[in-house]
Length: 143
Image (cartoon, rainbow, N blue to C red; front, side, top):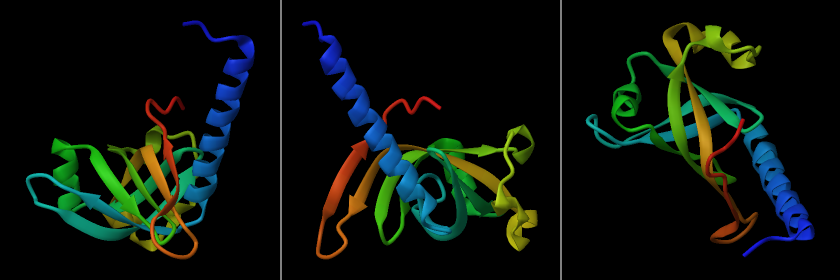
């Protein structure tokens, strides 16, 4: 089955809308709850964060059990009051980034490593009541 040009245009508009919604949602929090699981068991703690486009960067203490879990399973869940995000996390060196992150100026940065989360699925919560308003899938996030 072949798609016509108009169908591709609609598909691209929807993809752009979804990406923009995720970018807007990621900009809001300065702290998120990171949940990991692995050999160190289920871990959930709150950390400072900063968003750049579709990536979310977190400061995680060098002694955290989260890092041990991430060595074995990069899948994470991030939580805020406004959304839940599932993604893949990777410990990275700040030196490889061509970015100026305000996060790296935080007092705790000296004792932390930088973790980059690549979103795969975001569920945006309703303003009032129970449940989710939107679910946005971002498989194969091409940044």
